[in-house]
Amino acid sequence: MGGQGGRTLRTRVYVDGYNFYYGCLKGSRFKWLNLHALFENQILPSILHMGPGGSPDRHELRPVAVKYFTATIVETAAKGPDSVSSQDAYHTALENYCAGRLQIIKGYFSVSQVRAPKVDHANPGKWPRHCERVDIWKFEEKQSDVQLALHAYHDALTGDVDQVVIASNDTDLAPALQMIRDNTNVVVGLVNPTCDHRRPPNTSLVQLSHWTREHISEQELAAAQLPRVVPRKRGVSLKPTSWYARPDLLTPALTLATKVRGSKGAAFKWLSTPNEHLGGAVPLDLLESDEGAAAVITYMEDWIAKHPKSGDME
Image (cartoon, rainbow, N blue to C red):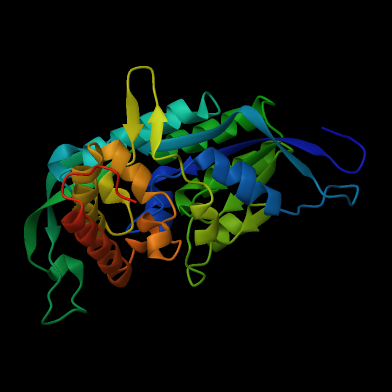
């Protein structure tokens, strides 16, 4: 672990998938995220933690660099018609693209009917025990946070790592961090998975960590995206259309481009290439705003009208 100019810390990152999604990714265009690249190229290089000798520590990721704790979406509770297939495509893309540097560890979702007190909107201060009880669906992610805690503690206790980096703001992990601090000399780093500067990391987690990264920037997320197409053993994994910034704008443009180019792959290639007729802009970037999409659609419709039989839209 020692070395001239500071320690080299064998490091592993533990990502709370549920907490990370709702803190950083929900409703964003960054869901097709390469977690390994995010931490290796963006987060860890920004961390300045001084070792006992007064020199900054170096972070050396282990061969299995990231452990990603998540759960498969239950179709009956999915919010979108493609939620299950999109998550499956993402997990497959991550495993194939990261080639052993990232391990996905799954819990499960529990869906059950329970009785719960209903908020009395006429008297919001009424205690739950005095409120009417109604039947509701209860959705819970099971085992993910427990597995994260156990893996982090096990890896620290067995000497597999010199540093654990916890990407979560879930206070349920505090006992595990306390045990790591009490029973090992392993450095604990905390990354608060949020892009919102107003959502601070939990105080109890900060107090148990040697260093804290308070937020992740959108620029860092944008710089760590997977390729749109990720090869796998049989076929490819494709970034879901619904995971782009404005799928409502992308879909009609993609339909027009596919009509001219002959395939969705060729259409995406055109949409991803800077276009001199659009001021040098990339059509796919323009499709993130109403104004930009209008310019792209107008250009394509005009081109199709002038070249009804050609497949080489410029």
